[in-house]
Image (cartoon, rainbow, N blue to C red; front, side, top):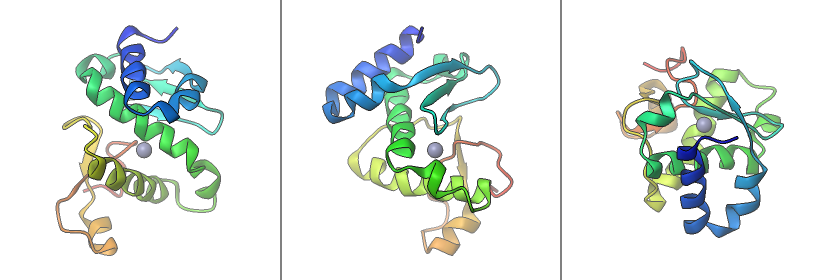
Length: 142
Ligand SMILES: [Zn+2]
């Protein structure tokens, strides 16, 4: 069963984005202590760290759920399979988060975020722009 904070986040997300309801309820929760974030796989399993979900607000959790659903709806797992996993994940996160940030979606400020200045320079982004990384501490993040 999904923890109450994630249930509340899911309800908040589908209230503001009703077209995501089917996707939000299709996720299969899998507790993963030590993950330090949320993540999904190609089988629509939603991995969550039980400690991290207590640190983030319901609004932030809803933003991260939205982020994870975007990975699934954009079929990132299939589209990234022939690329370096860390670099592809960072690129996918950036591709999602520029849309979410432009929409005004609140994402966590601390855990799960990192600066990827090298990637930003390569993409022509302003230095220091923050993105959400599904894999905090990934080698490509400075
Ligand atoms: Zn991500």
